[in-house]
Length: 481
Image (cartoon, rainbow, N blue to C red; front, side, top):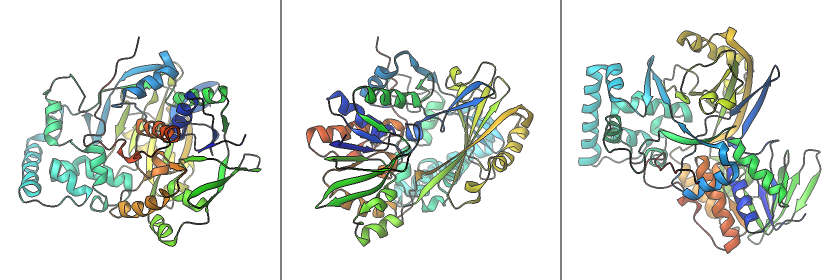
């Protein structure tokens, strides 16, 4: 099949694009490097002693302001698409804090003196940044201005530094504007004491939809549909060269799992390959200024430890955050608390996330080494013992988080200005656009990309998820009857 539409990457954006095209009678060829579709939103199947454990690559809750997305997924999953109560906590300085915040618990944990300090620092920050007009030049400035120094350092600055691996003073304020715009100490306090009621959009989501057998089911069903209607899906295949001439993509060489190379000549190329990698595939190479700008774009990788356990439950949390830097991991999730069907009866599992650059020691550690790094903490806290762990699995992923350092936007602007000059290229998704998005925004990008092809016009993909409000703000739609 010589397609007029070639899609590189079977993650949320690429598959959503192919799905929407198929609904309009347009077939495509989809190429995926991994053996499984879904990108970072895939669900892994782990067999242990004849029993099946399912796990996402990290927690994937679904929320959106776009009702079309709810209908899109419900049409795929039907009764598998379920509403789940959210239970999240932060573990800070040896104590648990519910999130969304509970006022009485927080004041009890931090004490009167620190509570007063938080309030004082907040008002001082509002004076410094509001009245005196101190510039919001970094992520650190942004969170201090909205929460005060004490609260900012309590959980936001240290956790963000753990994610990105750079000081908060070197993180671009775009990270805060994208993730927590509209959220400040007052909005958190109002939620904690129950002001504002429960009607309308939730300022801090306490429910979300989740598929019965893992987030990856969304993408497995899309793939099944695409193959059924005549589109091609090639897994364990990857592009090795992308040729262009006269402002158009002219040919794409794809190597399949047997090592054979096939050349496609698409009219439209939709790609979600990591942006810096895609530039390396181009023939001829981009101009020197574009290559130089791209060389400064950095990615944060992740190391995941997945444990199966011979016990019924560890906690009731969907996920727990660990901001303190003396703890080597940043987040854990217990998949059974998303859906009982993620584990066999009477068993549970635990997913542990470490943030790293690829040249850091942890990225080259064995599963035994990573396990020994983590297990003393959980034994000390009473989560579980090493004797209760029945299997250990290590997963590593590069290019998970695009690093929002202080120069990223200027460098990215140079790259995008040049790529936008290729008229039949659409680059989408978190890796493709070098933009930290949740799966709902990646799905929207894919849908919008399909309309760009169908309508023959350009849309600004960066407006998706760029609303000037807290990133998790959005209604929970009722399922259709």
